[in-house]
Amino acid sequence: MSDQDAMLVEITGNYRSGTSGKGNPYCMFEGYVHLPNMPYPEKASFYAEKVSEVPQAGTYRVPFKFQVKDGRVAVDFDPRNGIRTELPSLSSVRSQPKTA
Image 1: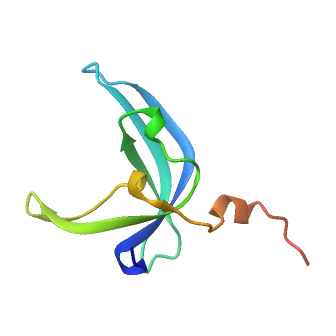
Image 2 (image 1 turned 90 degrees about the vertical axis):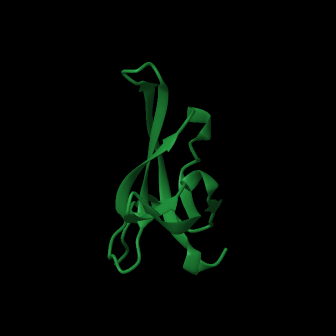
Image 3 (image 1 turned 180 degrees about the horizontal axis):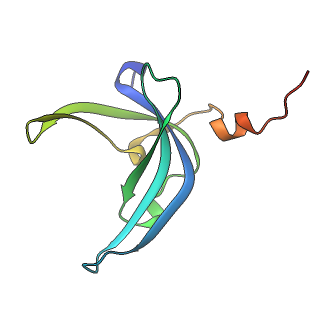
């Protein structure tokens, strides 16, 4: 996978799960997507069928593809298919004490 066909997604480890109004189980987990030409990552929610499918907190290189859905261009990617990187998470970089 090249850098050109993958996005960096930082998974926070935060999720919520429950049962929908129709009685179906769900699990939503959160992360921050690093979009090209954007100065800061954007917060996003992702779907998992079970809590056990939520990726561990960390930064992942996630493949993506463009497609047309209902006549609109969309980007399709799933952090569960990502490859974990050795990059530090933004939260760990932010929490480091500043030195003079």
